[in-house]
Image 1 (cartoon, rainbow over the protein chains, first blue to last red):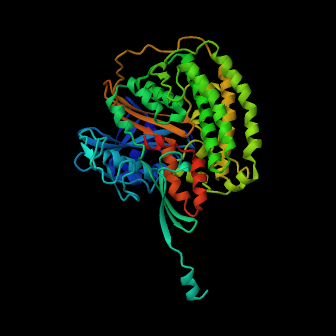
Image 2 (cartoon, rainbow over the protein chains, first blue to last red; image 1 turned 135 degrees about the vertical axis):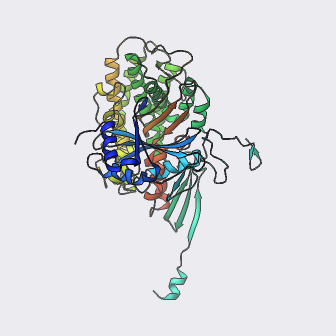
Image 3 (cartoon, chains in turn cyan, brown; image 1 turned 30 degrees about the vertical axis):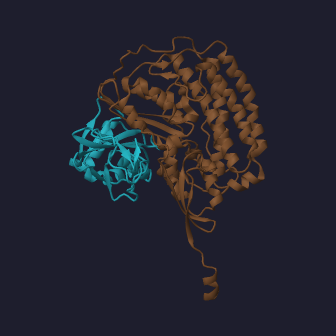
Length: 159
Length: 377
């Protein structure tokens, strides 16, 4: 088995999942992103992990991004066995950002998704631990959103 | 056993806090322990006591201004964090870095790896009740601190790397001092092994403890010595090379069940000891091969990388340290995500701590060598 290029990975996913795989973001993106429909993220994740030509066993990084008109979740994957990398991105509506969890595919997602929920406010449906992690449980708002308003105080403590 | 004796010997589950101010948690980490007697049935880490909103700060200051903040992401490995950030921004903006600057970066990164592993090792031994190694570790770390003070005037938060190179060239006589340090330090690793590593008490304390299999380590996202301690041969310097690492000869240290089971606390401990040896090997090669030349590329004062997104990772003492940077073509980052090794080690903590004794929890924390500013950012 040899490492695949982003284009080959995209075509492989497109052949398997059809319309759920939207596009390949290549120019200016390093590693390139395959944009997928949020609803099929679990099926795509499982395929990426288990297909013998892909074997993306390690989830390096999960990030939530606020693009002002929409949210995105970016997953960076790496295959230790084959040595290739790819980014997977799912765009979510701005008013109700939620996506199925991938902690059933990679356990590494548990804390990464908790952090994404905590700081960006993206809800991961079916998560085994859907709690805040870095901020207190009663904190209001999600600081990494672009429209975040800084609070005046927290429990009477001036910030 | 009769019902009466069962009732008389009834045990209750207790929930107690370990931390946030506890000498064995390496900082402000709080662990909620649910225990039945001495046995931990659940240990849930509670993070965030040191959360400073680094990623938010990254969106508000310019690209260059963020450099001093990276020191505070992992203050025991400031040079590594500096360089990782610089490499990430250079990858985003496609900046060519002068050859000599890359060699200097590798040199300071490996020196910092040694000093960071020394603190990790020393404080781990102190947690296990052996205080002498800690003093040894601090003594040797002093050498590295002195070298860095000579280099950039700082002993902890260096702010030495720059986007496009390093802030200034090595001072005269620096390489000689580095070589002196290598000659002094290398035999000491054997001394450490004689002093404590194969000490019967330490071995019995750590072997077969908190075993993590190789598959689990990958699945749960462990990185660095914690991953390699489970027998997985993966090092970003080798398997996803960056900078001048491909030109250097060193081997990836992996755990090999030296005393107990593969992936136990002792394997993770031994990985750090052996990695210091490899770092000395790298430093010697850098001292011998470092070329002359400029140390900083021309980068405009008002630095605006082209719009784009990039993920870069490097091998830090605490594992894979990654930056996901998004630029919209402006002077600041649009989004900056920092992925750290300690944070991912806390991910598996709850799983492996189940069923341990309370006194083994400090051993587990010490074997992960976590640092709290890195988990909380």
